[in-house]
Length: 591
Image (cartoon, rainbow, N blue to C red; front, side, top):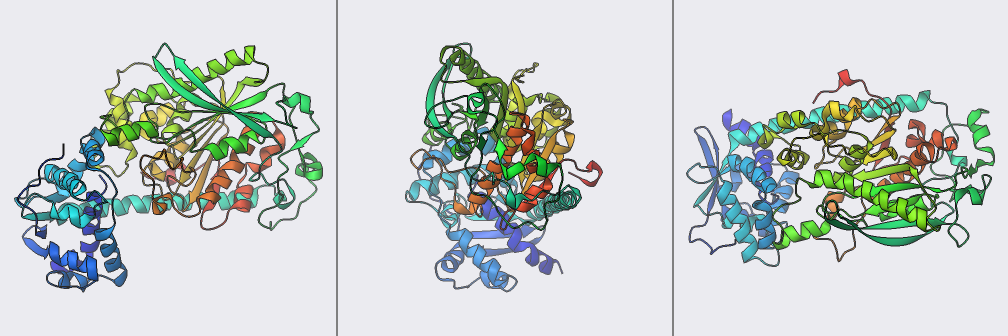
């Protein structure tokens, strides 16, 4: 019975252990190398020769100790195992070493070392790190898991099935709770779409298409002497009819956002309602503003200001001035410096403070330029902010969320047991001096946080301080900032009157982010990690951002019908389906 139980779990538990080996100063190769993997559970033990795994990976032939395990695996599981063994990893030994010697890398190694142990049953922390670095050094064109196994510096590798099975069960419980929460959001959204006053969106302007404004882009070089911090920002300035112009000069009756109309066919017929009066002739008028409202976009960790270039251009085409700063110690260059050995950390803890201050300083500079250069024509009292991942944290901090050191201290005590990878970054904030950081900028009047991190950084007490309209966008397959702990539960902590939760079923942490320029990406993200049809996700986000900021920044109430579950259902299509809720029953959610 015990052997049957272990065999049924073996593929999943070994899969976790083997996969983790590939995702967490080079020396001379050791004379000792592993030749066998032992799976142990109390007194039970079985083993597989590494060369049998190598033969299976190369030819598909099953031999030796692998025969017994293979009988209990499905063809799909065998194919997956073969893929795991042979998937190449293109990282230099310096890049591997730099990451594994960082605080985040060492935390991951500590947990993995409880599962993957030496032949003497000691934690595999140092052995795993050595094997990864040596595998990268010996295979400069890319190494595989088999290469790592062969470099393990003891004769045998022990996989602690007891620990591994516990992790499998814990992970399955997390997955089940997340799936329940996602199903709840989808049910609530479907119910809201039925109960809301319908609009015939097939006859209204399609906000996924570009608006009527063109734009020019300027790159600003900034230096904040108070922080001795230099950074750059791109500024997209709207233009109409070949010149920069203010919204009031264009006239209230001029239309914009009249891209290709339509989308999916609606199941509803347009009734004679207030919606019909608002959208007379189905044109969206320009609101009478003297100056262009401003939107700031904050990129994520290891990214740059080009990642959301598509969104900046989309918003600029609807008459928003869009500023996109590049945060110097958490951008692509910082990650490149880490991988090349020029930096010792993924990002310094002080970056949690500097990022929001970058945005505030940028707005100060724009205010100065606004007074001296008439071509800017900016309304800096009506500012919106968008952020992704680490940038999502930045947006929420600027919106008024406050740091919660007590919550952090509590959540970071058992960091080695979490499945929430973003906590590895959040907990670095504990290295900062404990003081009252005032990161809110009162010029920010609405915020969109895409796959944000911050559940422990802010906690319920910190997020409840946000009083402006806010959108949290979440993806069901996000493995970096998991949907339930980082977005769905935090959404229920918001007390703002106007709050929205967008859920992208099938989406990943990277679905809404565009690729950086090929020459500037320090670590290209595989297509399988990005997920299916990212262009679809970008279309959703572009349409939502236009409607959200038109409503709450440009105060154009004609766009409010787009902020509905009915519209989310209208534009939603597989493989990424969209749901929208404005409230959730907290009692139905568990963490």
